[in-house]
Image (tube, rainbow, N blue to C red; front, top):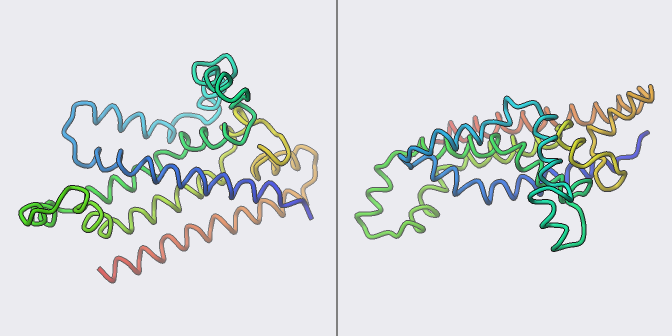
Length: 222
């Protein structure tokens, strides 16, 4: 039975990355759903880029950017006297960028599906923008937030190329479950690889089943 440390580290990484993405991605997704700016198409393309960009390419450029001599990494070293690369903090930042479209796109779609009628009615009654957002838009976007949270978490849990390039393979710090599986396969330890792969498969299927089941229930209730 292989150690489950990489699994718990992956779950921790997924929870933190998804929470930050929901927090920071919600304003961006809402802006994208409402704006008519010419910059919208460019920003949407940037957000969606990780879907088609090979993870090793994204990981390579993040390694350069976050490294001790990189544009971001050098300032981080001056502030904290530690490196972002080959650290859990670096994994979080890389995961946020890599899983961005899987959180922002469902949120944007949810916001776009809300008609202007409810919002305009609230505006005529004197409701402030924040009140409208929290009392009308958020409750009507429940399915979008659910989809974004599950997709972002599941995607982060299974990533390999980006986390390997940015975090390396440090036990207890950056050795997530996908890297642990690769290590076991490389060492011909197929039994251990089977256990971790089976856990990841079962967990991923459970996430997707829950997503479709709950979304189906919410769709019928509405």
